[in-house]
Length: 107
Image (cartoon, rainbow, N blue to C red; front, top):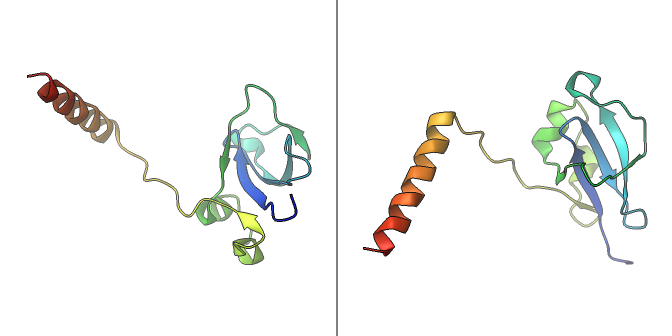
């Protein structure tokens, strides 16, 4: 536990926060967006229906929180980057390509 890192996270796509190693079931808030649906104050107990993902530097920009010293990889765990959002057509094409590859295996 001595070398466990603080996780920088996004909770339910409406709250930027962090999870301390000694309190793994709680998200401490850095910024909660009421416009995105946040309704709790810090800390939040992570429930079975909550969605938690590692935050990226881009998330800090989105929530208007300075990334600065949070970029210290010795102390914090965070996502290196956020995947590109796909359009509906791009997503469908990926699915269709995967199906074609799978179907080709059985011919």
